[in-house]
Length: 293
Length: 172
Image (cartoon, rainbow over all chains, first blue to last red; front, side, top):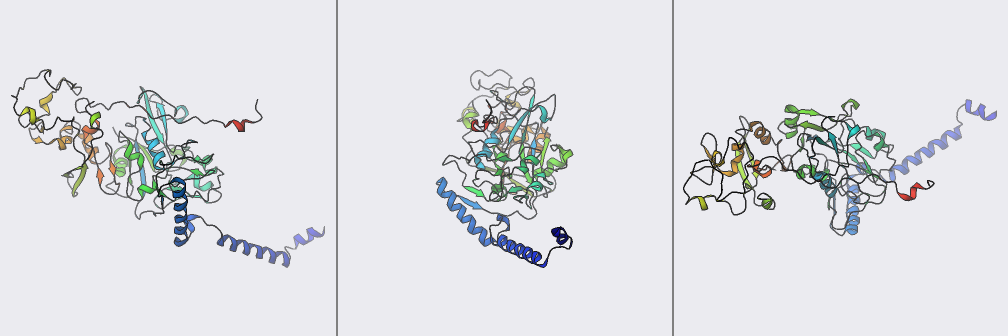
C-alpha cells in the first residue's frame, strides 16, 4: 500500500537524481566506447582501417588495402539488366564472388539467376535457380538474375535494430560488418532475398582474396554478419564498372549515373521498356530490368 | 573455331573516332582490333595475285570452312568484302571502309542495333562508367558469317540449402 502511494506521488528526489546520474554515465560511456565506422572522426577511422589492413594482410598473405572512398558528388547509381539478352550462364555470379570476397564454403552468392518459363513470364513462384543443363539458353526459358535492388526506399535498413545498415548518398545500401549483430531482421524484410548471412566463418582460399577492398564493401567478413551486393562500391566509386557488367558475355548488364543525361542508364530508361521487381511494394529499386530488342 | 583462336588475342587497343550524330563533341572509343583468324589478314597477301571472279559459287579451293548462315539466300562474299581493295569492306553505296569500322556495314541493315551500340546499350562495355569506355566490334561477339550468338555451358548451380547434421538433434 505504501509503495502505491509513493508511485502516485511521482518519483522521489533520490530516485530522480540516481536515474539522471546513471543516464548521464551511460551517455558518457557510449560516447567513449566503440562507434559505427561512419560516425568515427576521420583520423580515428583511418587508424582503424590501417589496423584492419594489417590483420587482413597477415591472414591472407597479400598486401590488402581497405579504402573508405566516399560517395561522389552529383552521382546517383543505377543498374539495368537486359532480359532479352541474358542467357543464364552465371558468369556474373562467380565474377562477383571473386571480386567481392564471398565465402566459398559455406557458399555465399550475392547474385542468383532464376530460370523462368517464357509462357509464364516474370513470376518467382515457378522460378528455378538450380537449373543445370549442358548449354544455355534452354528452349522456352528466360533468365532473371537477382541481387540487391538498392532500393530508394529500402525496407531492410528500417528494421535494423542497431543502425548497422543504411543507404549512402549515391544510393548504395551498405552494411557495417563490425556493427551488425546478426539478428537477420533485414533478411526477413528484404522482398528480393538479396541479403546473405555468414552462418559459419567464411573461407576464401589463400591467393584468391581480392586485395583491393572497401570498408563498406568487399573487405573480408566474419561469421555471424549479413552481407549483400554493393554495386561493387570499391570499383564504382573509383569510376569503374561493376565486375558483373564487365564479365557478362552478352552485354546484358548496364550501369551508370542516373543524373547524367548522356549515360547508358538514362538512354535505357527513356527509350526501352523497363520494369522493376515487385513494384507494388514501393521499394523503388535502383535496379531496372529492360527489353533491349 | 576461328574465333576461339582469337579469344586470347585482344592486345593493343585501337582507337576509333567518330562524331556523335548531330550535337555533341567527337567521342573517342576504344575498340580492340577486328577478330581475324590468325594469319588471314591482310587478305591481299594472297588475293593480290588472284584474278577476281565475281560469279556467285560455293568456295572449294580456300575458305571452305566458312558456312554462311546470314541471309545466305541473298548474300555472298562480295556483298561485304571488296573485290578491288581486298583489305577493305564496302557499304551498299560502294564506299570502302576498313575492317575497324565494320559496324557501319552491319548497321546498314541493323540500324537500331547500331544506334543502341553507340549509346553503349547493345553489347559489352568495359572501363569507366564516367570516362573512357572500351567497346567491342559487332564481329567480336557475332561471327559475321553465322551471327547467331552461340550457346554457352553455364557455371555450376548454387548449392541447395542444407540443414547441418548436428542441428537436426531430436529427429530420428
